[in-house]
Length: 229
Ligand code: SF4
Ligand code: SF4
Image (cartoon, rainbow, N blue to C red; front, side, top):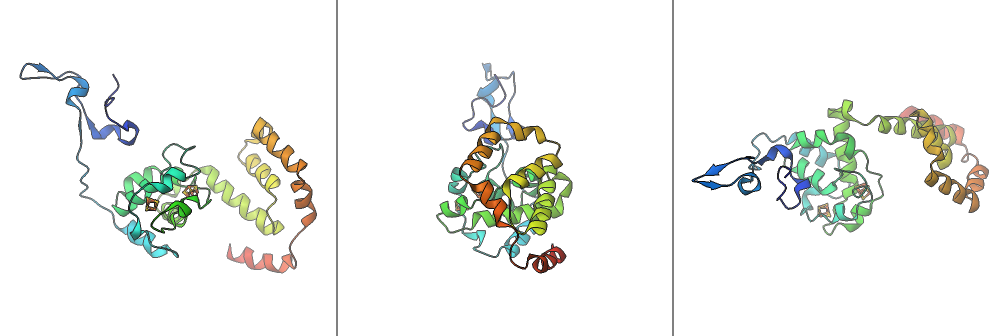
């Protein structure tokens, strides 16, 4: 039987927090395996509260102090159901309790947030959860830049160049450039991608985007954005 198999919600418990002897006899009674399973104490002596201060100071909207750890944000999150380890409630818990090592270990996962703001709308305590996750991501970028997903960096660069050169988002072109930059152009021919492309051609979005051209006086505005980016 795998280690900790009898624990409810086993996936939420880290391996090294489970104490379990495969073979153990105590006072003549066989308590091998799950019968002697214990969990390590969750007391943390070395809390790093700098991260907490930084995140709080950088929030522009509602404070994360209101968070009651209800998990509504994670339950409704677009990414949590798709990406293993992506859990907004847990990210807030870690930063709040100074467990920054856990947070750093998930640095490349935190950046998978797509900024859809569903979590913010679900929060019963009016925490702007999306902004909190973004701020945690920004903090991670400064402390563990080497852990950031390469796709994130490429995406950031491609997005920035695209916006500055065109002034508008051309999603098909953006996606194509992004995948080519990562050497993943094969994905452009995946069935889902073809389906989306055909739909966009069919409902006129592609034509509309092509016709839009650049925004009024874009050349001038571009200089401002370019120098600040
Ligand atoms: S929904 Fe709001 S209160 Fe609940 S865990 Fe998420 S941020 Fe905290
Ligand atoms: S903004 Fe990010 S954390 Fe919030 S629901 Fe969307 S993907 Fe999840």
